[in-house]
Image (cartoon, rainbow, N blue to C red; front, side, top):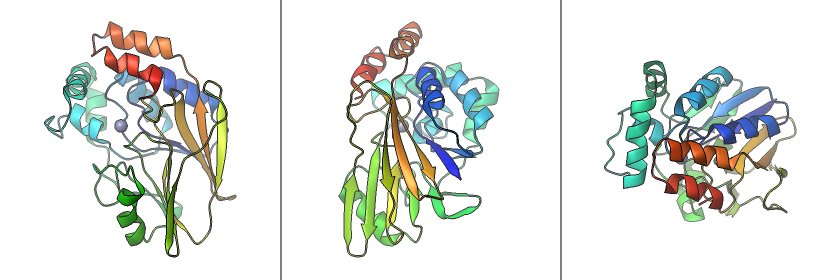
Length: 251
Ligand code: ZN
């Protein structure tokens, strides 16, 4: 089975479309949350996600945009985007987003896999460093956890008494590329497919991953997308302009 892993689409329709076009064939699709927030196509992305997806985990921006979380922890730019998103979503999409499940979520037919937005212990926690990853890696009984939230493609593993982080290394800054990670059978992994619509690792390309369960390989992908169209929608919606300009830097 090949599982397409999407996370942190953030209402970026152009990045989602490019990712779907660049993805190899897959059997099922998993969405790790933050479907909306920041970008200017929340209904289009929610509709597309609902058509495609079977398994979802909610993200903090999904909660913020649907009133499940107050905006005190959001910076002014993120809060402005959450309020705009709330006002723009259709009642059906608002309801659908509000009912997305809290992680960890299990994947039918895959007892070794769990899905979270932040960390296995706290849906809103950021797993950025190896230090952040150690506690969940030590306590995990599940070999494979897919997470999002940080918008940083890559992850962490623990094998016996050793633990480390990894990032896929790409050769270009503008082309479609893929990097495989062969998983070891005795190790435990926390793996982030990266952010489709709001990358923050200095690479502007849309990020996603495909897990091939037979080969036990995660393929990380980056693909260019129509950046200008995504930016123009943000300017047109009168969202904070930096939400558009920062897409070009992947920050
Ligand atoms: Zn996010």
